[in-house]
Amino acid sequence: MIKLIQLLVVLGALVLTGCEGKEPLYQEQGYVFGTLVEISVYGETELRAKQAVNEVMQEFQRLHDMLHAWKPSELSEANETFAKGESMAVSAELVAILQDAAQLSKQSNRLFNPAIGGLVKLWGFHADEFKPQQPDEKRIAQLVAANPQMSDITIEHGRVQSNNRFVQVDLGGYAKGYALDRAAELLGKQGIHNALINIGGNILALGQHGKKSWRVGIQHPRKSGAMATLDLHDSEAIGTSGDYQRYFMVGNVRYCHLINPRSGYPMQGVQAVTILTRGKHAGVLSDAGSKPLFISGASGWQEAAKQMNLSEAMLVDAQGIVHLTAALQKRIEFTDKNIHPQVVP
Image (cartoon, rainbow, N blue to C red; front, top):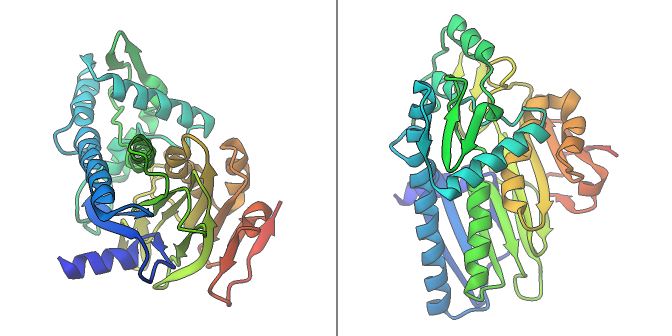
């Protein structure tokens, strides 16, 4: 178990830095949403911090159980209902989540599309371990032609139904961000104002780390350790989507879990995308917002960033060249001195 945690720390898209020393810093780790979770609380007694963190961890487990895409959950039950062309009553919380995800999908010109769970499953990513095999091309084409969209889901009086039986919702690109926002809400209710929540590459900051901002590192997509660091201010979040965590290799070709809904194939030509968000729903946007940029690729990520109202963003292309916006350049410090980023407006 110790080796597993160490490995996950190395593979995580973001790592906490600068927290050494005898400070009033409480940290706890867990494993949920299929990834490593770490919560840091500054300036509270151990007992108070532990109680608050335990509540957050329990909330994460509840959300994991509710939103799991392929194991028994409220969401997987809804997917079974969609496939049958029937309707079912769901919780008010799931209604709100589906509506919000649909709005984000529309804003992204449907590049963020949680309704393509069928394609995610077809490529073998509805599993804890991925087998290096390619699906049948005809089956891929069939699912693409079916064009499942979040807008195919109708919600009336707390009941959900889809007029497209190919809709299978996978909230893997939304749930971690939603959990970050829930964590911020729960910690705030308990009077915890200085904390950092890290869910496998999506990090949300509350308050400060003492007299300093929370400093985090952005994982290098092809090397161990951080490629850059930046300070997160209060209510800011950072999220990274990369091709280096959930993927398999066939020959020399890498197939990652980030699937282009228009082609039905895992996106290639991009190693990683990182975005910086802020505000009340910074967590959700840090998770969902990076996907349209990644899928748009090196030629279209800037336009996708504008559509998602993201001024601070960075893309690492297939050659390892770093592209970033001028706004993010002001915030980021590259620890890898061999990186010479291309800055865009």
